[in-house]
Amino acid sequence: MLDRPLNSPAAASIFRRDDAAPVQWATSAAPVAYPDAVAAMEARVAAIGEGRAGELVWLLEHPPLYTAGVSAKAADLLQPDRFEVFQSGRGGQYTYHGPGQRVAYVMLDLSRRTRDVRAFVAALEAWVIAALARAGVQGEVRAGRVGVWVDQPGGGEAKIAALGVKLRRWVSFHGVSINIAPDLEHFAGIVPCGVTDHGVTSLAALGAPGDMGPFDAALRTSFEDIFGSTLDAQPPA
Image 1 (tube, one colour):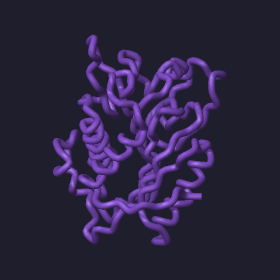
Image 2 (cartoon, helix red, strand yellow):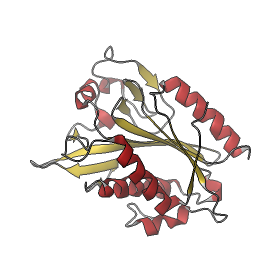
Image 3 (cartoon, helix red, strand yellow):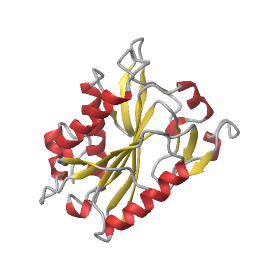
Image 4 (tube, one colour):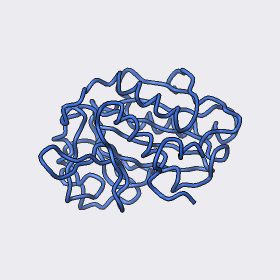
């Protein structure tokens, strides 16, 4: 068992495939409705598990919405009429998705990598931290809190990336969401991830470049450092 956090991308190389098969890498240009994304993930995860399809990382944005993970508490939905709320099979509690936030759905076969859920979560966090570093932002993990956090310029700390995954027969899906330049006020409708003592921030709010394209490139390079090579692909239907 590997302790969280992973100290470097090199430590996360336990998640590289022995056969070095590349992971397909797809990006959706237009926002994707949440039910459509979940249906596409469900189909792809089944195909990966049955050996009919390759692994996939899918980058996208959603229209404004809230999702409730398996640990969500009803009291944490502060404004239930603000946006549509979707129940999600991922881990975690309530979160917001919307324009300006990069969602990365990660569909990997851990049977061909490392069957260690705790280490996988740490590897995903290490991936996001490495991508943020390429954007000039120092992300960190916090004991007892899943996700990636940053120190605020005026003091205190805030969450910049959320993480929620699900495994089915050791194939992962759902994944991470990183705040690039979303409307942070929309997080006021929920208690994000059940945390009341700290706020939420974004690259743009921190004064870093808020362009999606360059950050996508940083995500891809950092992913390859940890999980192995990638291959351009079309988004799932």
